[in-house]
Image (cartoon, rainbow, N blue to C red; front, side):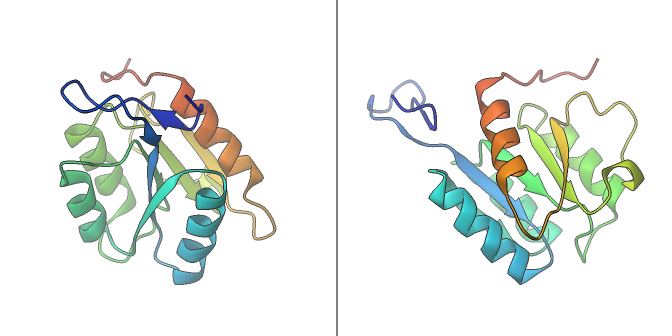
Length: 144
């Protein structure tokens, strides 16, 4: 099985499938760029332009394996959005994808948040490396 694939839950066939990544960003160019780059890297990608759409996608039965989120979505405050994700889906790793990681307002105790990767218009390499690393590492469902 490829490292970019996972086994289906018990009761499903043993066929593996690509990891599903949900990209949430207000900028359509960023969403298209990340969707293209992550798809080319072997991931299944879904995109969301708003916090509302992000929450709907997370609530789907076949939700994502990992989130790539720019917390500056038009219909949510960053700390509240990240806290809501943490509360409702604590086991889903989150990559905060923003221009300045050190300036990002984040809820306290983000041990559950997997990584913060700064946006780079010229390359998605760092983001893809982090996504691959995180999908190989189990995420604790309870903050420390």
